[in-house]
Amino acid sequence: MVILAVPDTVIGKVAASVVPEVAAGTMVVVLDAAAPFAGHLPEREDITYFVTHPCHPPIFNNETTEEGRRDHFGGVAARQGVVNALMQGPRHHYELGDRIARAIYAPVARTYEVTVRQMAMLEPGLSETVCASLLSVMREALDECVRRSGVSHECARDFLLGHMNILGAVIFEEREGAFSDACNKAIEFGKPVLMRDDWKRVFEWDEIAASIKRIT
Image 1 (cartoon, rainbow, N blue to C red):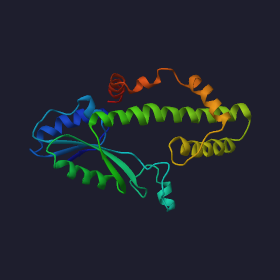
Image 2 (cartoon, rainbow, N blue to C red):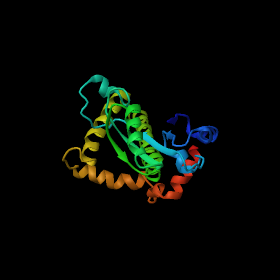
Image 3 (tube, helix red, strand yellow):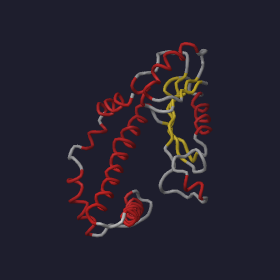
């Protein structure tokens, strides 16, 4: 077992020096889908490539300890999901890779088997291109609200995060609920102002590939 715990930008160089030296049957583990998706792993049919990445602890959870609630990244006290891909290698190596992933990212709530291609759409597509970008805009919106209205940062932060909590719970079906007519009208106006009509093109495979090329 060899784990390439190095930045995406150097995985290709590191793998090129390491992979030719490992014994046949070795499992090479990569902790992100970007480099494997981009073709930066050397071709070698007699070894296993296993890709694994954490989901990170979800916003909605049942953590009962302060340590668990404060473990936003995962790997300390809060349980998280993990996605795994057996890129190549014998089928029985998936179980071994899954055990390694559960040890690395413990405590783990559940694991999901996906392909490298599917993992690439989850990240960078879903988690970074979409989620991180929109959250960054929300933080800018908070600062702009403070600047324009004169309310305190603490007031605006409490108001925004509180509404993120209940709006998110309803949108992601964590609880039953319905938005007010005023809220629905605000969404109807706000989405076309904030989002381009063709924003879903970020999930097209050529866009995913271009994003990963920039990353790696």
